[in-house]
Image (cartoon, rainbow, N blue to C red; front, side, top):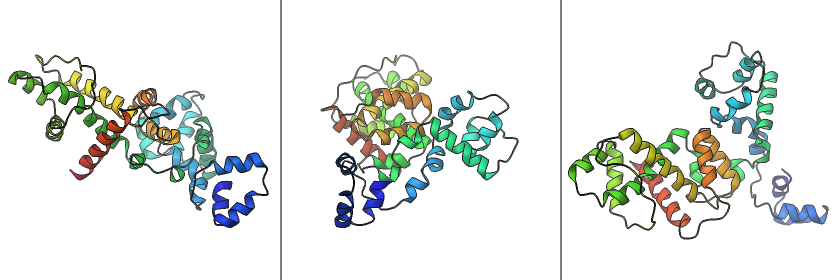
Length: 272
């Protein structure tokens, strides 16, 4: 907040104000790259951030409380989160109670330890922070098709191809053809699928897991708070997998390729 307040005075005046602070505080403030002068993201941060968190991250917190308290806790959430828990709150909370519960959730989720989205450095992948859970899940599904394309290139049996193609939507099939026309730049392990059988459920699960892995590695090097927002938009299962794949530094010769795949796919999904 101090960094944002200083920004409101302009570069020169802000620089002069810093001189009144201890040297270590000046150094810390100079390391913060926030350029914004707007205080609203800070003031609106707790509730706005909580309401974009998938309910699967919140439910374990609610389960810690006695059963008689849980309906009030659930009533402080938004309609989508309440629906996800298949709950029906039996009461309307006064604003002061709702505000207290929201702040308590924010404390338990460590939301106050994360910079508001509006202040994070912008990268090519920043638009993903505004995607819904369903949009991200679709992106992950399609990313796995890059792995499938590598195997399909070596399948000549028409029945085997039919077993695979039948499991894809028309849009997925079209994107698979796009992937097959691209040069393989990454060597990935075999999917472990049996083309002799038409097992759509297994194929979709395998492709989805590969998509999660690709997205996690594409995100390597991104700001940790950006990763936090992204994984908490997803359910806990998918979010934990992405966190396991993520590293603070980009993976040489891997992350740049995967970033380009994600960017191409973002354009494909938004334009189709």
